Image (cartoon, rainbow, N blue to C red; front, side, top):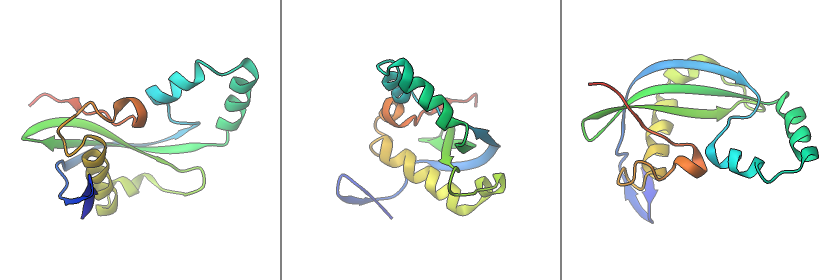
Length: 128
């Protein structure tokens, strides 16, 4: 059970299937991170690039349903210190986390664009 605005809430999104599971090197880019980088000095950008060589993340791309509408959603987990294999994306824990994150960042699926800028939570509509 998760909390939404201080109240218990059921996930509003259903994870239907895994589309893909891919490991990546570097830091995951979000619109907010890109926005921050625009204000960084050349030295800060160089330091970030050097640090990103040691970083890694896992992207679990899911087909999810919200109000009977299919979407694509990418759950991204930093794997720099926590080693996760691509098989993790198939686990119930990963699916539960995806539904929880969507629910929290979209205010209970009432604002599907709400988590995009700061958190990178974006639901891309899929063909039915």
